[in-house]
Length: 364
Image (tube, rainbow, N blue to C red):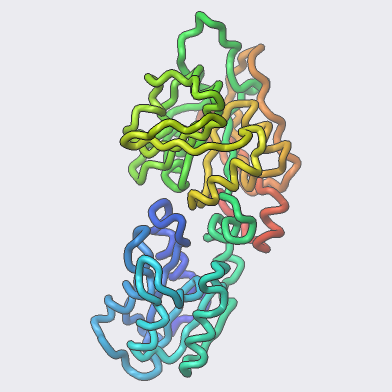
């Protein structure tokens, strides 16, 4: 027989399998045991709009009615409302679960304790707070989205040993990126892209580098590309406007008609990041991976509107160029060495305080 903590850790391991596929929903895993602690069924939320973890676990048991004394472990409070799927509380009660053990309540106002209340009133024993900090950490994007009413913001940049993001571009410069890190780091960055709802770069970076802002070195769901285009002057032949991946263009102009894969949304001022993030919150964008350039990164840092900063320092030097932002005065979450660079990941103290996160992690 395992301990509640061991079963909850299994829930977290299962939940993580849905990373990058379930947003704007949270990652959820579920384990069902009999009265002797034998696992009867497991499941996780596999994709947005699909069955929830609890339903998948119940289906795996193969039973329409479970034996007396069964316990369900789940890292987040079961839902109690009709959304894209029926309430999980209905399925739990219908199968005769005797006890429900959760990691954290659900901060979504549609749930927010109602699920646990329904189960308790129906006679289920309800226990909450098992591995709570680990559960908060796994779903830090979801908790930030619900508490702060904005997406979770991850800033990423790569700088040279002497502190530059890029060379100085001229009108004659070929539109191309200047690589500071190596192939291994690029694979990791594409893995990170696959884990977030959206990816964003500044107008100058898009014009200078003509990036695709998609997944090529890692398999997963293509993130929404967010393209700021204040005056709608970006060249329509740029890769980010090719419609091959979902793309949202933010502009201060009257939005034109969209086309396949390409939508427009008006923002009163692209200089007001709070307004930009509010628009993305309305669009149900759970998290944004910001990949530059210097001005956009500095804007997020100066406004304090960021949650993680992932900073590569390459071993080459440019001697002159576009200066990189200084490392944020924030706790160092982790540090990793690669063949061509060193990676440091920082966590915003406000993010730590918001969700009361304590465990260390790799930022992914």
